[in-house]
Each structure stands twice: as structure tokens, then as C-alpha cells.
Length: 430
Image (cartoon, rainbow, N blue to C red; front, side, top):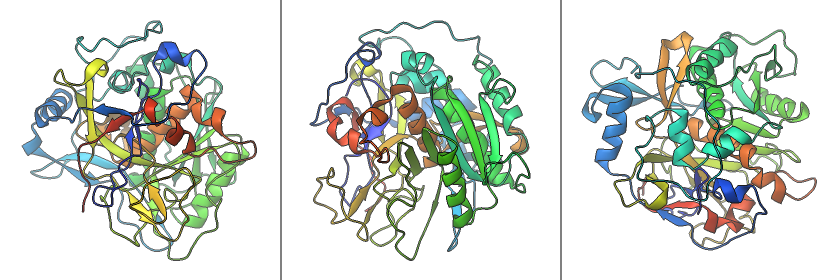
């Protein structure tokens, strides 16, 4: 896989079920020309070392791995309702939120396309947008692409400080403003109206901030539409997704998951011409018969999670290592037929994840949420989902390969697997 982003699903083994190789599209220079489909094995990613992960954690927080642990942002899902799939770093001693050391960055300079990366240079600061852009070789595409796309973030409840917090994040990292006034940012309820807005929920506020900042990190030029469902009831979230599609979103990011007891008709979570990306959850491989929706649906890109860290010299030109994050969700849904583009023999139904991106809170994203104490370290597949949606926007790859009138699924990634990073280390259960 050249450089690009995230991770493509290749690890279907039920024992691993970590989902996804590592999405590395084409190099920035090649991305400007005609794209050629390349099937076959992806470029193997060197496994991240514990020293590299610990180094990234120390750089962002000043803490060691023994001093921190992770915590779910939202409570577990109950029937008929969804839960956000966000993880945050907390102190092991008292479970207080960890606040990273964030440094203000100047406005990003002009970047030109180049055919290769220089792995010998020191990597950017961990947790920053530059870290993610360079880790997936997206520095050029992030600054040049995505201007015509709208990424919709669909979450539950209202975040009254969403626009202000987004402004803090973007100004801190030298990004141009994305506001209601300049038309870059819009916030609506599940009916598509600016008022009335739903009630507040502090956990979902944190999720919303994570999502908005993640899209900004990889696609600073994208327009962002926040669609707030009245609640985390599945019916409300479905209505919000339909509104996002109706209002013209090119990509929809769902950083939440639910368990459904009855089969949901195909197409419930996918829309013609739109790429829906949904997190696979943060509880590892749950075993047969326990699936996460909407990620499990074939028309949806199921976003798994990885651990991303600098390589120690064995990562090739990329300069980063990547492996399956131990918490990433994955599955085998036997109630759904296997898509014709999946050829694994370990699952008789729909295998997932499809693509994966950084989701380890120790190597994740610094983001800003004023309602929960300011700067936080975000992770979970709730980070991977908006990163992949932003990747879709800046590359345009999925949209260009979709059939007219069809949803933009992850089918392209299976045909272009040779252009993707392929993490072959790590496990999320047995």
C-alpha cells in the first residue's frame, strides 16, 4: 500500500477478527493522476513496539503506561438504544481524566506532493493532526483535498459548545476557521432544523467534540454538518442519518453502536451516493451472534481500530508502525449474506471490520471539549470512524468507484487492497 490512511480489512480470522489492514492509499504525487486498481496483499506494517507506544504516551501526557488506563465515555448500550464508542485516558489512581500537553501550532505552510516519504525525519508530536497526516501519508491530500465535500457527524443529544470548541481546536493547530458564519459548519436537529435542539448529555458532548476535531485533523477543507438526534434511541439516530443524507452529506460518520435483536432490512443505514462509516465498538471480538450495528451492514464501512506508533527503523518509507488495537470490535454476522467482494472463508456471513484507523487512546487524538475539562486524549473506534470518513473526502476513492444509485460501500478497498497498509500483528480476542 502506498501512503494514505488507515487500515483495510484483511484479518478476518475469527480468532483475530481485528479487522482491516491499514489503509494506505496512493502517495500524494500519484493521487493527482489516474488511479489504478491493484488487488493482492497490502504492504505489511511493522508491529508497534511497547517502547514506541510508551514514548508517544509520554510525549502527549508526561505519564507512563503504568499510570494510566482507559475508560468508556458512554455507558453500555441497552436494547433499542445506542452507545457511543469513545474511549478516553484516565489516571489509574483515581480515574481522573488525563489532560494532554497541547502546544499551539502556527498556520500550516504550503505542502507539495512528493513520490516518497522521508522516514528518517523525526515524526510530528504524538496526538496531533500532523501525526495522523504523516502516519498515513496524507499531509498533501489533507491540505489540498476535501473542499467540495460535506462530512456529517451523527450523534445523540446537543453539544451547546460544539462550534466554539471546534474553533479552539482549529485555531490551536493553525487551521482556518470553520464556522456557521462562513458556511463551513452547520448544526441541526434530527429533522434538519436549527431549532429546537435536543437536551444535553455530557458523555455525548465529549463524543461530538472528538468527532468534529477528528474530521478537521484529516480534512481541514471539509464542510462539517453536525446532526443531533433527540436521544440515543435507535429510531432517533436513524432519523438523524436520513436527514444527513437528505441535506447532501457526502460522508456520514457514526461513532456509536447498538445491538439489535431482529434483522433490520438492508439499506436502513446506507444511502445512494453517500458513504456511511460506523465504528465497530471497543470491546474486542464478542463472539458469534453478538454483532454491532450499523457497522455490520454490508452497505456501511465498518471502522475498526489500530495502534499507530513511530517505527524503529523497520517500517520502511512510511516511518510508522501499526497493529490491531486490542479493544477494536469486529465480527461475523451470520444473519447477513456475505458481500460478493469478501472472499474470506472463516465466516459464512458478513465479516467486519472493513477499514481501520488509529483508535488506541494512548496514541490517539488530542481534542478539545470545554464541558469535560478542556483538552483530552481520544480513542476508540469513535475516533476511527470520522478519520475514515475524512479520508474518503480527501481522496475521493470510494465515490469514484461506486455504482450509480448505490451506497458508497467499502467494496473499493477489497479491489485496491495492494494500495493499503496491512497490519498483521495484534489481537482483539479469541
